[in-house]
Image: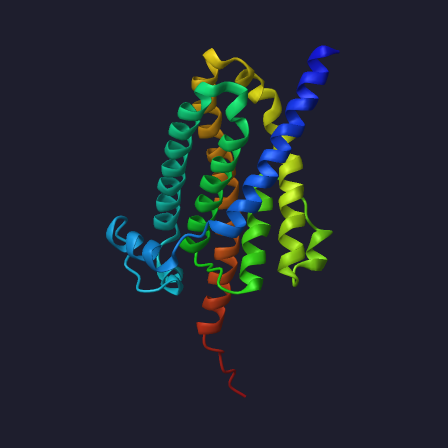
Length: 227
């Protein structure tokens, strides 16, 4: 009984922390597309001058870069989790806020890598659909409000927070013990970003392949049948 009450309380704390964290990240965190494009060209050797150019790059090359992007986010999340984890339960909320920012930046980078920018409201909505997919959330009901981003995004964030809090509460119970919380925080943050990153990568990869097929069909000349 006591264990159930403790986990229920912890889940509410995690849900609140994630909702606040993702809302803050939505308002303040945004990967600069031009800087990331330069990074893709210089650090990853991607031969493109715009994000539209990724549709002419081998998909396997994009997949390898995506894995490296996810690993980078995992390492940052692990380092952050180890540092704040020393405080145990006290640092759960600030930890989740930072983790939400790291996760969203990883999702944004994967979106750009596979050729999907987020300059318009529609593109921003698509980005949060991907975030929901990464969290394993079905937002079919919320899609009706997709065109109204200011209403759509907060509702998606709430659904993500509910789903994610249930996913991690069992594992993060160890954060109640400060002595173990540093290692636990590092490990859980690491695997949290890995799981979300891989699901987001799958989402963007599937969309990328659909766009690539469409572009290929548009380039294919119609055959002329002789009478």
